[in-house]
Each structure stands twice: as structure tokens, then as C-alpha cells.
Length: 162
Image (cartoon, rainbow, N blue to C red; front, side):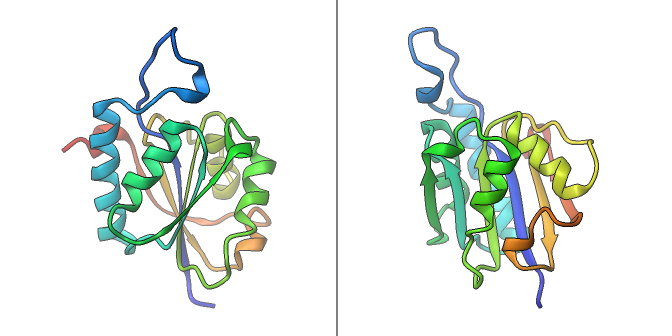
């Protein structure tokens, strides 16, 4: 099986407001700009994403669409991925179509950090907003989580600022 790419990414920097429920918080201008930069970096590193799985929270969905850019990737929003556990995130990833070569998962902490740690087989990652871990996947999507994956790249937001 040829290798595939999986990016685990925390949503971009969101507005903090007491007037807006957490689920509805939008991306800030900084979060939007950083998401565009990370999206360009993804396309130059592993090619255009083909599938983006995201929480339906506005900040995650906006991040996902900005990461996909002009790639024509399928962006699939799933409400149950808002503040999802590792098990829920894994189950969602197992449904990535088998012909997809490059996928992105956009979500929230602590779930996405725990997922990155599980997939890497270590407990090093605590993803800040737009923190991204890229994995080289050599198994079918439905086998994710059964053994550690090779970490190809880890980006923090400070490295993503234009």
C-alpha cells in the first residue's frame, strides 16, 4: 500500500466572548490568516488535501475550509466531533474513504492532542490553536490507532505566522 498523509490540527485562534456560547465562537482575523498559511504549507508539503473531517463548530469549520483552500477537498462537518474524545475521533477517521491519499482532521482540545499522542505512540503533543501534526500512514484508514504512525512534521503557530 502506498503511503497516505494524515494531518491532525486544532482549530485556529477563536474570539473570546462572554456573549457567545463556546460552540459558536468564530475565528479571529489572526486565526484566519494563520489557517491560510498552514493550508499553503500543507499543500506544499504533502499535496492538496482530498478530505477534511471537522467539528461543526464555526471556528473548526472555518479553519477546515481555509486549510482546504482551492483544493476541492471534501469538507465533512460532524456535530459529534465538537469536544470529541479520542475514541469518537478515531471512529470518525475510520470512515475516511479508502481512495483518499491526504486527509485532515480539525478539532478541539483536549481530544485532538490526545489523538495526536495516541497515533504517535507518545505523550509529547499539546496542540495550541492551529498546531498541526502530520503523520505518514501506511495502513488502511480503518486501522488507525492500532499501531504508532511515523510523525512527518509538527508545526506550532509561531512557525506559521506569515
